[in-house]
Length: 244
Image 1 (cartoon, rainbow, N blue to C red):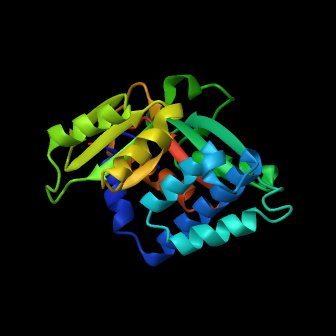
Image 2 (image 1 turned 180 degrees about the horizontal axis):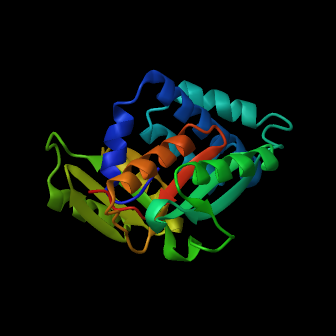
């Protein structure tokens, strides 16, 4: 899940129950399987999409043994053949732009659920292309610096030297942005320097953000995002809501 102040979402995830963590691992496992299928290899050196998902899995603290088991399963005949990736678009309360990335083996089930999630809290599902134009795909790496282990200047120089497009510091967190094709190289270079990521993945980053003035809209937006997060078919939700 993402929007303005990604660190807010990372902190929320860090404090989640084991059940939430298990659900997150299940979704990442599905991404790994599909990455192997679509990339044609279970070797990240020969499959850039898989390398990207492995970086995401490690940032989420998914155990290496789990990753290995999923890759062995994915390399088996027919693994992941029934999954397809679908992106839905729409609006949340107050007109917030929302992109929903799903991975499903039943398109009708998932489309119905996504429409329900939008409708339940005052949003609505739109036509393809209605909001996607206002997002850019970027690689986003977050480094937790709440303990002050790193200096801003040093991290910025290391990130830019590694090929990052942009760098920002906010709320005890460093955010490093890359072009999609440079994501793996930048992540590998920073990992080699000893950095650990609180989050690392390709994201749909909004070109601008929208505030919600009504408390009811804020509450409903949170509830809608929670519905999406709890849906097993939903991999990611991107939005342009600027939280207070």
